[in-house]
Length: 355
Image 1 (cartoon, rainbow, N blue to C red):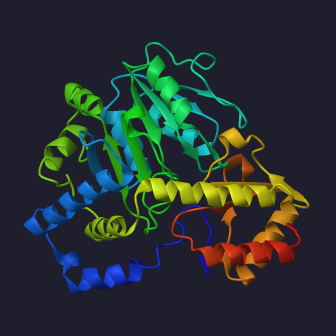
Image 2 (image 1 turned 90 degrees about the horizontal axis):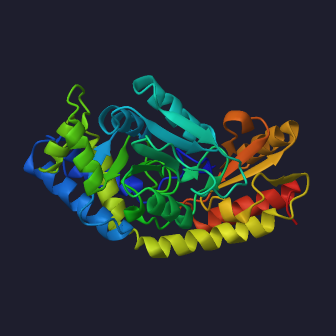
């Protein structure tokens, strides 16, 4: 089965060999306080900074999921109020989750086709942190680098946190335009689910230490202290960390990956614009995701498309949230191989969607 599901998605083909290597080297049994683990952790952090072009003074943490990152941000990096800008299900869920811990958190929804700008969609002045979803997996939209720059320029004294779950390791991100970035690894990193990265600027680290929250196993103060020794506050997903290290050794510089993904996305969007009976969910090319392609159509057609694709050995992504019944989502992640894209194109042609 070829998975085009937008997470968990297609693994890199090398993952089975890397898992075998982990077994043979005894990685699955090493203590997370041991020199062997520290060496893996230290090497991975170095590779992430090199391959993804993360600033050297940013701190990288290992967490269990992007949802855990929502919790860490809410409990440890916000005293009272954050402000969330969102146009889809995951951005809205982030706000709602934050409100459980910080009831004063507020947000503003914007349109699917809208290019947001701080002059027209400002942030509450008393908000300590701005929460943005760079790639909204539920509907296939993204915020451009220019958008992130505009909010950084307008609000230099506020922390900016960015959910990059469906884009990190797939597109070139300007990490210095925000203070907290997070992503799960089951998407563009091409790994099994069960791990995430949280990447913090010096300003975010200072704010977390200033707040000084120490009441949870994943309190930011403890995370910072442990990461000084390249360790975690809890027993981590050691296998996931090792696999990510191996993947980062294998992949090219993010600039090359970004160019490939944008080229692939451009080809797909050009073909899919001419579809019969279905259409692109997002019309505005300036806000379309390069890694998650969303198609909309009549509910019965969508259901038949997914069923027939599965018979052909192709797994397409369900819709999500308010688009659940009338959309299908296609991942354009780095681990998906060229011949698999060709197989999907052939299927869509035989199905009658593209000519």
